Picture 1 (tube, rainbow, N blue to C red):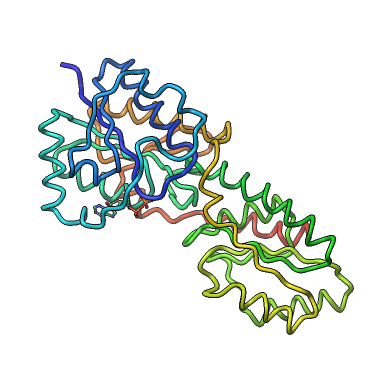
Picture 2: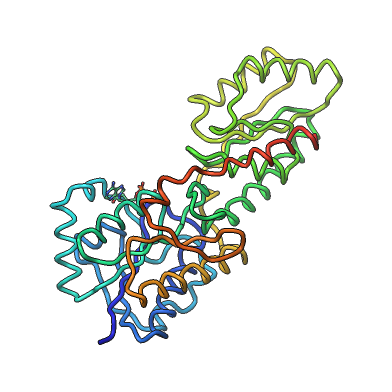
Length: 320
Ligand code: ADP
């Protein structure tokens, strides 16, 4: 009997989710499955927002940012009674397996559903690159390119006016976006949750650079390090001699057409998720390690220590 497989996107959206949805639907159909999409993540499961699709339903979405299935956050999904409603809806639609595209919260939901009898496979869809079971998450590369494009523009005016700019980028708990963008931009300093620097040390550095005749300064900082980044920029202006501006890039980082790299990653990981479902497996998540498609037990994946790329950090100072 043909398998019936659902796919959903959950948690923070990112460019490349659509390419992953397309890969899952097309690979599933090719394997003889009946394919279903669930709108609004786990919320849609609970509300029975579930529809059968054919291959044309995912036409023309490979290049689109965001997620055509919409995303939602449903904190109540941690409650088993709420999840029971989701399981009942899946049973009603005779769906026996699910592909859940999202971050570590989404993985937790996928694991809980697997424990309740529906085989789920997690696919890493998040801009932050904060999932240890893959070298890169789908969306990271596109977001990084957006940051670099924006920061190039900020750099032009920073240099012209001989200012100091602090560019704030996303990455609440993981500094990869700031670190990789920092290297791509050749910035003078990065400040991330993985690599914090005290306000005093930043001010001291800037004073020294000013004294040494350095004309302008570019810094990249992860979000949530400063409660009020404009106030910190004002403090820098007051204490260092550099006119400092804070530039918060915000949600522009989440959108846009996915890069070729993210689309290829989405195709590889989406297809592997279907391979695992065809083998009758669940409670796993897929990833790319050393350019090889791999999978891990979700429990194990969530315990893995994340690579903080300290080997790359040295490049910030080395190449300054
Ligand atoms: P992300 O997947 O991007 O990390 P969230 O952390 O918001 O985003 O998680 C997405 C959704 O996954 C949550 O809104 C919730 O529905 C579900 N989820 C998160 N943690 C759990 C958990 N411990 N048990 C069950 N479901 C969870």
